[in-house]
Image 1 (spheres, rainbow, N blue to C red):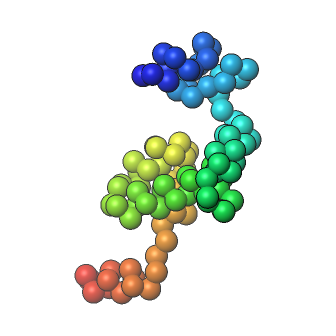
Image 2: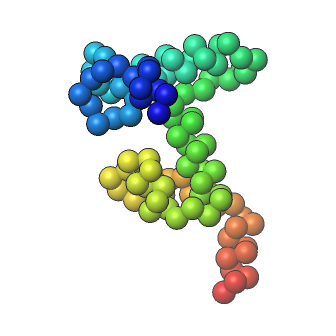
Length: 100
């Protein structure tokens, strides 16, 4: 609530995070801010919004969160887009066969 009351620009937008100019955050805006934040740390990796979305989705899947829930959280229109985050390795396949 502190962000909404004290820091968020006063714009007409249903989005929680918004800029004064557009009422939303663009990918470029977010990546630039993220790049600045990472630069202040000892992390020597190229971290982008896509990396964060991908790692978050994979983590949720690995924690057993329903793929439909993840689809909604990520704002995907098509479940097939979300399904790209489902990585199966040979051990997962073996365990599935053993269950059968």
